[in-house]
Image 1: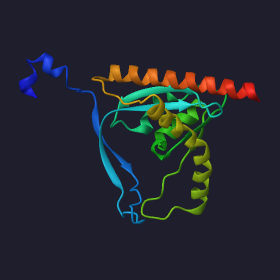
Image 2: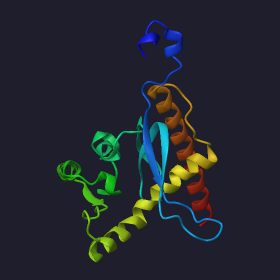
Image 3: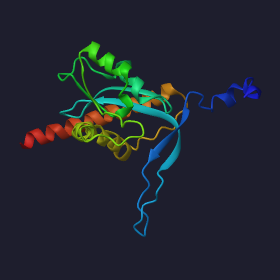
Image 4: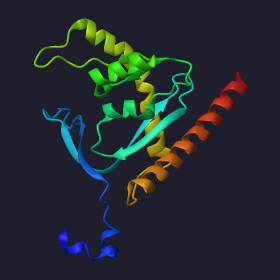
Length: 191
């Protein structure tokens, strides 16, 4: 607000880099067993973590922090793909499917395994449903990383500014990788 321009102390407490977005989630089954016909849209203010993990060991290889309203698909071209990775396949959800991303992956030597989008106002063809189901088996490996960060490290960003949020998310990613490494070391020792 204009009235705050001459009040730097007041401005320093307002996060002007974070943005609002909506998180859509499926409505949960009610106590009587029925499922509501509408899904839920939850307003969310803050930042978002974008990660790239190793398919075999599930270690975070690359990551990026953006405001919550930033598109997931555009982050693919901003350094999330790792050229030093031994695999060239890119497994991602439909948010990353675009002509620009497909062209970028092709030029960089990556093989796209990105989910296909549902055709507008048409039922999804069976071969695309089957293809997406197969891709989901691999792509779904990234979800436990976020779940682990929320449950084990209590990742909840309450900082002002993207620099502090980036630091907080980066530290959570390092902690996750250390815990994952120790788990993999324990498992390999028992085999």
